[in-house]
Image (cartoon, rainbow, N blue to C red):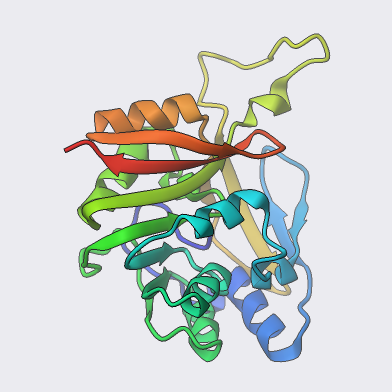
Length: 249
């Protein structure tokens, strides 16, 4: 996901490490290291080729989500467009959005017709969709647990009658587990699924941003708060899950 959290802006190309990596990979078939920094974890690297994966190369949760898509689709934080391309080939009407102009250029070049460089929270983004996709830890867009209802209410505005939201996330509690099964979590501190990230590609540094991993119990509670129903439809191998969210009204 390349969306910024809970603002209405897009990313300037000069401060867009992921978009630059996506653009390089599309043009050259290779890219330099896309570094992922965080105050909470050791430096990591995102394999850029993973953003161009085929349906066969996708993890099971993503495959499952694409199997149950229906109707008109909104793909949020579409990146290089791997999910939108699969759905387009299957005959679905798909609108792909991302805040990265470089990523959007690549998606258009790859054959996705309806691409818009826009932030999810920009009021100019309008329409009603039967399926809203937020994959690759879609809850991350909220940034903080307290902002999760804001994300859900915004998605609710874009739902057609009988629509579904397909969203995935992970429960990071396992990071704090000891060998005896006890968990070292400061209950008086911030929610343990709130993470800060910064991406760096070549000499391009992106802005730091907040990212939310949320356990399924809290996701369900937030959905109920917003008049939505949430059901986990598949669990992954590493504390991750895919949820379907529908309206209760």
